[in-house]
Image (spheres, one colour):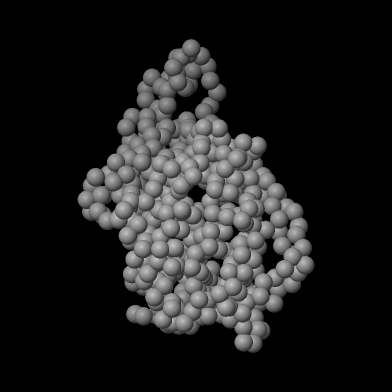
Length: 444
């Protein structure tokens, strides 16, 4: 049997995309080494960490790599950015056929966002002996070669998906190391505990001065809700980073709620279902009422539920995709959307209003899980403002003067301290960089 010979590659062009700048920083190089295309570079996400990259040809994922290469040069330039020391990646890619080909290099960030890092165009040709072999003069006759194609090297199991028991899928290889948190391998350092203590005290004082009611409502990780479905060999620890945060909140008298009773997650997605979000919504409203806020919650009699199937953010990554069931709410809607900058992920701002004279107003600062709460919370407030961010933004609170302030982080993100400094400027830059705007006057 003759040895398979891949075409030799020449890099025709290598262009960096400005799209990456709206999500962080990054650089890309492409070098031809015989029959291999060596694609390497580095990425630092802002505000969400980058976790992996893909080389894509149209709809086909040709190669994939996690960000785990040491980059002391990047760490030297960005010494205060978490993960800078191992922000690099490398992919060795080969062509299966000759001709002209191209690749788009896409970066993926925690939370689901993605951005193009750059594009590469190559020319693939065969050397003299390889050309003879392909034409059948060495090793038998062959028909004319098919058009250009890449050698696809993506593993059968997606590196972000962990198969658990009974068809349950979980997240792995994420930048927050959710499995490390679950098993007790990851914990807060003493300095991080002090920083969280300062953050809680500063936020609490600011909101109390405004006369608003604050709640720090933590959405649990799927792994925390369904540890029995994790694969064999992964043993959840009794004490995780979230428990340290809850202790710090208690010490600083921060009003906190761990929504662990919202136990409805789909098998194929990291996010809770709308039914899970509804249970979280009920718990939030109950907490606020107990603290004197006149807010009513929709009860089960006002909502019917329809079952549907979907792939989810984990099931869609498998080949073939895997679906699971989830529940969709059917309900009467009274609130209207009065503003939506319609930008993806961080920087998104949505404003709802409903005819509720004398009713309370609310500002939510939250991650992607908070989106599921909006369809219920908008029915309980006269005005509801959602800002997709982990920050708490004083300028927004000054503009809105809400009765209630909700911070809705995701459990696995708690290992990263939010940075509230110059928060409005960062929010505005993020929204504008993605083609959106804010409903409040610019500070510029």
